[in-house]
Length: 542
Image (cartoon, rainbow, N blue to C red; front, side):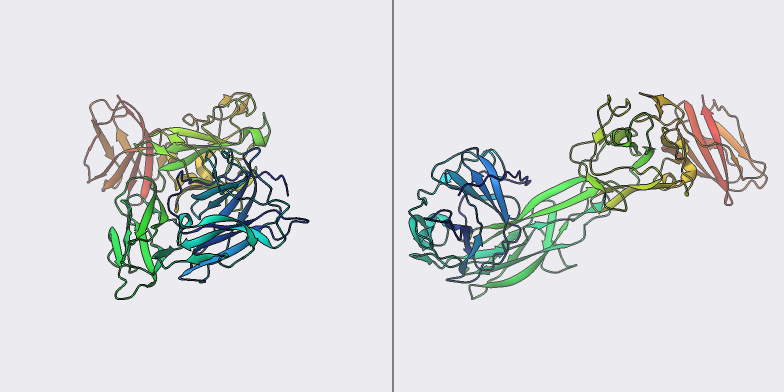
């Protein structure tokens, strides 16, 4: 029965060859005389296999597109020699030439079978794959209550042969089918994720997966990929491999394996498979996924346009970030979110250069957004005019957060962005409304802001909490700077570039002079703290 539904399914991992599989399509029914009934697909495999997260995609052979997808569930029961079947009812399976793809919990195409002809999928998880014709089919001569099914003796798909329609055996082994005794590994945790940590603070928290075995002739060897490590004990000794001993029997009971992302790794995303293997058994794998995030405050929010005036909000909203480190940072995979429901995962590479800027906006078209250049266009996230949050997260690490509101002292004016003061370029100071000011430079169609460029707004650099504080000479030409005050006690001195990067820090003893000869010529902000009191100045180095 032909039904035309089109569904694009995107899954991140595809395998291009099927190899030997112990989980497979075992029975199909899609046509019979009269009104078609009980259409569906049966899956066979080792008992205990959890099909939650597996899917079946149905393909129309005439256009090679997916027309229906079903999400599987349930655990394969024991029917014979630690093997069994599960039946999945699906009304409306089309006549051929059509195809069926079986996809595991990681998005791997396990099988791509077809009936009444072959074709190459142009859609779905099997996109680009050539189907394998099973060689039998159904038509309106098939009796109600019959199906096409695998027959023979064996354990794996290739051990059996497809037979013409016979009495259906939904949820049971087929007519003339015998499941042989064969080793099997069961591992149902297809993905172990969120094994994250902030760079320099590893290893990650522990994740787990469970492994068991039946009809084994040898132990199960579990080998971790290069960037992960495993253990049979939480908090115990972690290593590159674990061996589960079968002893004198043929069975290994379900065993929890603990896994974590190794310490000492560089910033980046890590996705690798852990492999479970045993002699004569089909190896099973779980995808391990972790992120080593940059340090908190490595990327900070420095400008927000929440209420454009020249164009509408959907076109003109943006925010700007700044890289406070000396290395480029790629924000791909980071999440932009708020306290509420809105969020967006950055889907492509966004390189924020060392001590440089990147602009994120709702619309990247300069003809529509008010006339500014965008590094990344996001969806599913917007900026409220009066109060909202921007939260940047890498893996489990919150890198920066700004919560803005007029009640909190943020300067919310239509058509003018909020700019972070050049002297407040860190992830603590940028979450205080007093450190933000109104943009005074126009761009594009007339709104005010400096998207992608250094902010113009700077707080007053003069603060005089230290009594009778004097700093001289300023400008300084010979690299020696002197400071005096009423108390003349020890002082903590910090010097910042106008970008906000700290370039110098020293504790001065009483009446000690400051050597700034290694600073490049330019203008700096200098902060002096003495006995809990603070003085700030602009410093010119010639």
